[in-house]
Amino acid sequence: MHGQAPSAEDIERLARAALARIPEPFASHLADVVLIVEDFADDETLDAMGIEDPFDLTGLYHGRPIGEKSSFDSGALPDRIHLYRRAILDEWAATGVSLEALVSHIVVHEVGHHFGLSDDDMHALEDSAE
Image 1: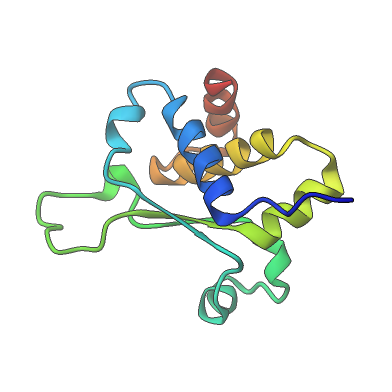
Image 2 (image 1 turned 30 degrees about the horizontal axis):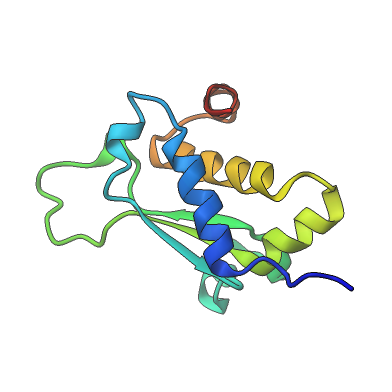
């Protein structure tokens, strides 16, 4: 007998724990980032990114990188990290990586976009958040 697949709440709990492990100076800039867990990205998002298979997108950062913000941005939507539960579960099943490690990797990658970091910078951030 198999257990139930992790819920959106389970994914969100793991993602919040991953955010809590991100070190300063990054952590203090993440207080206002909204975390959203959905089963899949919507068609508009997939089309905009040129992605045909919704299982190919596990997470997405929406917002302006921190270095591009200004005090004139009032009224803008808050920055958001979207996590796509079904795509995450599919990757989890395919890779054998722990769900906690996978969600942490995705969150750190999306946070990296928030700060405009390169992939190398993101790997260093991820290593420091473990």
